Image (cartoon, rainbow, N blue to C red; front, side, top):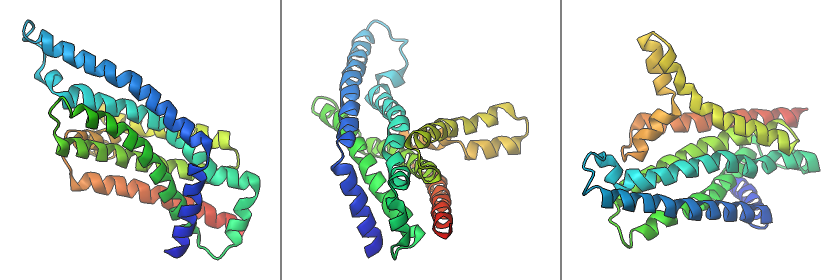
Length: 257
């Protein structure tokens, strides 16, 4: 654990002293500060119009669905682009700067390298998610918030970002070009959302169930509505482990070469 902790602290310091990380956080904050008040204003107008338009769906009058989930959807879109920007430096830049060779010759295992870098990346992502959480938190000053459901919804976004981090770390381990790593990671992040579409185009009930089980949107939808299922947690943990294992294999192959 000491070696993992040393790598984790090194990579975390790399994020904290990198002005690009603060620029990313600042950009995300600007975008959220622009979009979130708009969503609140739309929600307030729908509440006022409900007196005259009773056919408005009840769900649109719930702040969790009308404001918070939209806020999380925008956060997810940002993470699709932001996580690759954070992860591309972890292996690609080290390969380019030739510091990766020094890391491979140090007395640490490939698994310890991957785990340390992954944990540092997750802390960096958690900072951005924490910034996003401040908006619903401040909303609680003048609106009633169901903290349990909101917390589970943010847990869902955190688990999705953990999958992004695993896939993007794997992309970074494959090349020394940060640009190539970024493009690959974005493609992975977007593509994983289309896996579940297979359930809509197949006729076999068994195949449809399989596609639904591996659909990221299906698992996330239950979490954002406040429901935690064991199968959902296992699904996310499996994806993280899979891409972590693939990253470890790439690092180990580099050590032998």
